[in-house]
Structures are given as structure tokens and as C-alpha cells.
Image 1 (tube, rainbow, N blue to C red):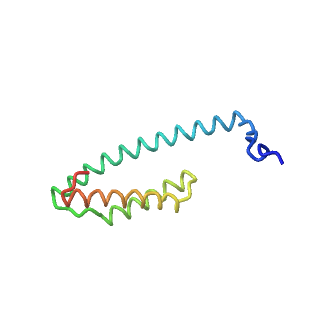
Image 2 (cartoon, helix red, strand yellow):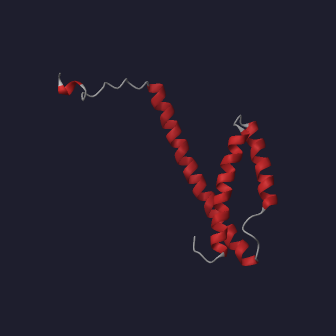
Image 3 (cartoon, one colour):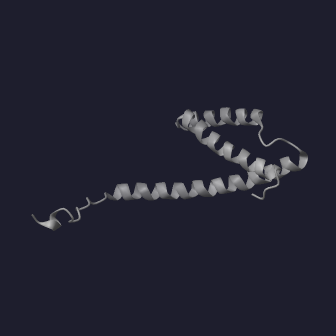
Length: 109
């Protein structure tokens, strides 16, 4: 039995140019999302400091409900699953509230 038979690298099928282009676009979109999230969190950090200064709580359920409804409408208009959009926003809001709590408690975020 040839020992190298099991260890020879398998030929990788060529990637079609269209797939490479699509992947490049996805990579660009992912980079834009990261930059947008960074900008969003810079703003929410300022909000957290302002809330701590004026004595407002870290969470604002009324604002959060309005944002969820708004985001669901935007998702529907964009042909994106509104449930997915809501889950995505909930993840972000939970992180923002965690930051706001840390700011209120004196931690430097």
C-alpha cells in the first residue's frame, strides 16, 4: 500500500471569476459594516456618558421599541427578513446597554 496515496493534496476546483467578484464585494461590505459599527459605538459611548451625567438609566425601553419597529419596516422595504434585523439590533442594543452600565458605574469604556 502506498503511504503517499492518502496524503496527496486534492486538486481544488478553479473558482469562477463571478464567484471571486462576489466574494470581493462581500469582503468590501463586511469592511463597511465594521466601520459603520465602530462609528455607531462611538456615538453610543457619548450617549452613555451623557446619560450618566444627567442621571438617565442605561436602557430606554420606549426608544428601543421604536427602533425595533423602525428597523423592521426598513428591513421589509429592503427585502431583508425583519426577524433577522430585529435579532441583529437586539444584539447591538444589549452591547450598548452593557457599555452604558459600565460608564454609569465608573468604568472607562
